[in-house]
Image (cartoon, rainbow, N blue to C red):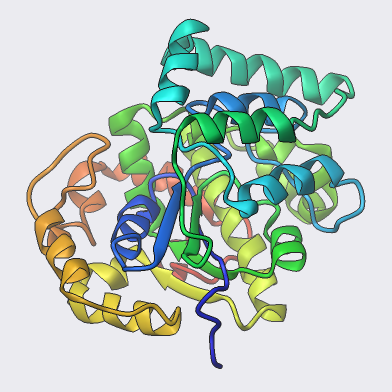
Length: 328
């Protein structure tokens, strides 16, 4: 299939699946503009306003009832959207005293409010454009927009149907993801999406097994399983979507990235290879520096047998095909 050079690219995965690493490398290409996590209300000041009526992981399987979601992503796909690392975004977060603790409290309260009441959506196109202009982040309209998001995984069909991007799904071993969750204390590890009424029909055949789960690690495994099973179902009817895995990209990274560049019709040059080699060094925390060859089975060193079994209990509930050997 011939890909359009101007078609937007949309990269998604669950948090801690390697999407930042992938997006940063793709973003080194000439003529590509990276917009990372524009829908992350924890860091985006304007995203916090847009998502007041939307869950942390908004769900939509059709365009019916997804008006506010579509308006939000329409602004993102226009490109006229302020980056999270802009001075304007940092300034506004500082003025309103949004820090990690306050942001998490805001998300928790919002999730509870949305679950119990209907919140009116807000379209703030003008304010978004104004803040974008204040960043002086003028980009060439002929550049290709690359959007990276780990909070859009429950609404990919709507994004695909409405904006028709080159969709890239990133999978990673659930134990590796959860190992990272526990190490960095990631709140997105479990947002109780299995309790969301809009997912009840999808999960109705598995409720008896879900009810017996009683450990945080099991619920983390379940959440990843829900995402992966939804994506596997979507891939059945969207064979043009590109599927990759963190483990695969860690093996012979340069050649695997060359192949990904080719699939997306992005010109490969030395800057991408230099960036891959630069990142291939020891690192920790939220930095993307890592020795790639050491990451594939890192969970086996980080997690004990009891932790692994608890993760498997949650991940094994749905008929997920990815990492089937891990299921019990």
